[in-house]
Image 1 (tube, rainbow, N blue to C red):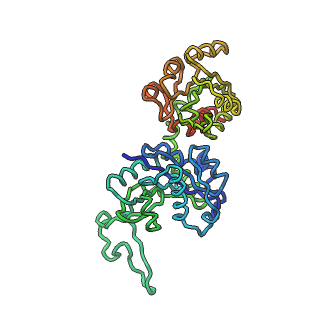
Image 2 (spheres, rainbow, N blue to C red; image 1 turned 60 degrees about the horizontal axis):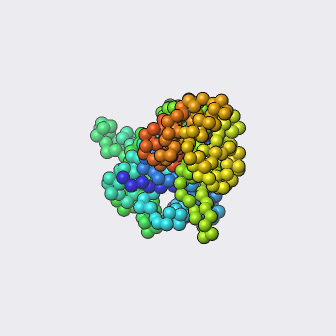
Image 3 (tube, rainbow, N blue to C red; image 1 turned 90 degrees about the horizontal axis):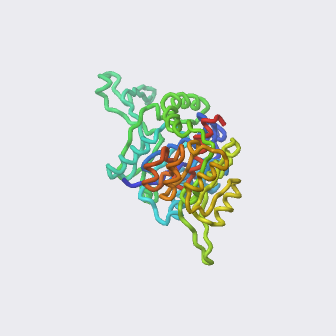
Length: 395
């Protein structure tokens, strides 16, 4: 099953509800739920958020999405979603070096979906060899009328021969929550739907979206009733642990494990600002944090200094150095949360109370970990962990 990128369009201007994409919905910005749902899905490889709003792009990055700055001319009330999608596709192609075979679109104002809906839509799209797909809700008892020249007529049924509900031809409501399509289709036709069209059916209650203040209350009801328990359970294991020390490996946790080698031989890495925010929040909440790295590299020192985190570099024996640090600070190893990604972390991770691995960790590390994040290394691992720990702490 091929992985696909997800795109979320979330412009800053909204008439019905000001700053709609950032409104507090069940404890998080509304936009955050679509990002989290996409990152939880098994068939998504990266999440992109297109917006003209710096505030929205900041939230997108904090929750592990890649921000795409949308031009003002594509962010007006009259600008089409397709134009914004084409801009986003160009940005993704430039960043990846190639066009993805397919993309999935999530509507930020449709929070009533599950990661399994995203996976199900992608699986249906691929199994049916479709060119495009939309999600729908079944309307099997819709008695709609039209008025023509002052005369009422049945539109979806024969009112003079109603018959049984189950004998009527079902109708399918395009609910706007999820679309999957081939980029080539959009480029050739200017439309996200076309060619061989497939559909993926969702329960009708998942079709409600947020366009008015009244919609917020309705969607909150369904979210709390059906979806919030899933996220509580998802967060419960790690959130219930209260570490006295959090230890981070650097490469592969704070970075994507790649290195930039410049012409003069110096090296560089790419770190995630969302992780910096998570470390800052944990520090403010009183959590002790250190970086334990095999490398002796000024990059690690510079990043640690900026984050205000103590760092132990050049560790040729991580278990020994971890034990020594804990003994000198009177910290029990069973009260340590260790985030590592590779085999050189294994022995240290076996010593602690709660080993954690990023999604792209070494198979042996993934097998050992009590918790595996949805984020890959360098894509918000620490931000994800911080949210779970701080949620339990009530901060």
